[in-house]
Image (cartoon, rainbow, N blue to C red):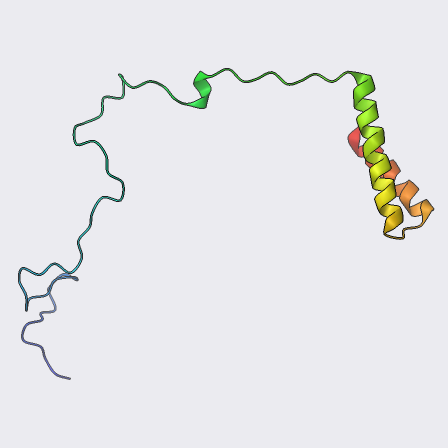
Length: 101
């Protein structure tokens, strides 16, 4: 094993003693920012907590039932297209209704 006279074990990684002014790795900021310190108390709060949440739309019971019935009809048609037996479809749709209640 040859010994490199310019390299010493105690040298920190990244230093090259053969070229004393040579920089192997230069770390730069990834995102540029302001040069002066930021005063957080003068900045506006742009978080979501400062804005009111929109109200949920209320659906009356009849519309809700219509949506459920339509969804079940779509599922039934899809199950029939895949070739499932009517008894199996009935059981699956009954379980779906119980899950939604």
